[in-house]
Each structure stands twice: as C-alpha cells, then as structure tokens.
Length: 230
Ligand SMILES: *Cc1c(COP(=O)(O)O)cnc(C)c1O
Image (cartoon, rainbow, N blue to C red; front, side):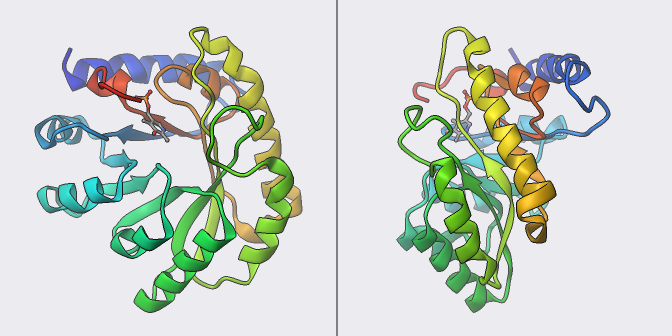
C-alpha cells in the first residue's frame, strides 16, 4: 500500500474516533514516525502533506536532515542520552521523551548556548510496568518544580507509550490516566507552563487514544508499513 492510501485510512479512523471524544472539533497533530524509513518513502509522506517526522535515534535525525528541506518539523520521540542533546537541540521542534532532571538541565544548558528555548514533553510511565522509560506520575511534581526555573526549557505537555496489547482496548485505562494528569497540570497545578500537547497513541492504539483525549499521535507502521522492529 502506498503512503497516500495508508494515510487516507488513518485520517478516516482519526475522524471517526474524534466523534467519540469529548472535543470532536479539535485538531490533532499527526507525527509520522519515520525511524528506519528511507528518504524516498519519507518524500511520499511529504507529498501527502505530512511534515512532522518522529525519530527515536539522534543519528538518524542528523543524517536525514541533510536530505530534507526546512519545512520538516523533527520530533525526538525516543530515549535521549544527555551527551547527545547537543547534536539535536538546534534541529528538533519538540522533544517528547524527557524523563530526568539531569536531562532537562542539559537541554537548558544547550538552549542557553544557542539562545533558543527548547520545547519538551515529559514522558510518563503511567502504570510503572509498561515500559522502562518515563517517570512515574508521583515524580512529576518534583520535576516541574525543578524545570520552573529553567529559562531555556518550555514544557509543552506530556507523552506516554502504552504497552503493546493485541487488543488495543486494553490501553484505554492508561490513556484515561494520562488525560486526567495532563488536564490537572494544564488547568490547575502548572498553568504557568502553558501545556498544549498530550502525545499518546501509536499505530496499534491511536483510535483509543483519540477517544480518550489525545491531541498528538505518533504513527509509524500504519502509514509506512511494518518495520522489522518496534
Ligand atoms: C516507534 C514508535 C512509535 C510508532 O510506532 P508504530 O507502532 O509504528 O506506530 C511511536 N512512539 C514511539 C516512542 C516509538 O518509538
């Protein structure tokens, strides 16, 4: 299947899921996850109007960026090591996967150097058993307190990765929990931070994520076809 055909199916499913959400009128940002995807397939995505690309390796961003024009918005969605921040701070539109204060410190330090404020999401490990990355919800308060003083870090919201279930319905509870946490932060606890993005939902579970209030999806295989790894 072509990228165009796949994208049409995804768009239709997003729209159908939106109708079942609390806010059917809202727009959803779709990040096309391009890890392992070759440049020619990425150009197909550009041709259908997708230009937010998500990668999980620093090196893949720094290589691919040479083949793409400035209209592309790069999203760092994978685990980020502190010593690699310097290679991408000036290149990415959003870092989805910040999960430690030391990583925030490094992002802030690098942001100061290039005189730019870096947009970030905090990755949350909702249940504690799902994945090895992300902080637990109980640690969020501590992290927000630390970040409040960082001039070059802009916290734009939260991200989570639900575990992979054959039955995507099982992810609903995880998404509900993150939605509640997000709105508590945005509307009450941390209104200073200007939360805007709730990044949740992948190929296997994006319809559930949309129904549960996601406004940023990270979708790879449903657009580009199966990869050899997740
Ligand atoms: C690979 C990946 C995705 C996309 O996965 P698909 O199942 O191909 O849609 C989304 N988020 C993260 C963090 C990923 O690593």
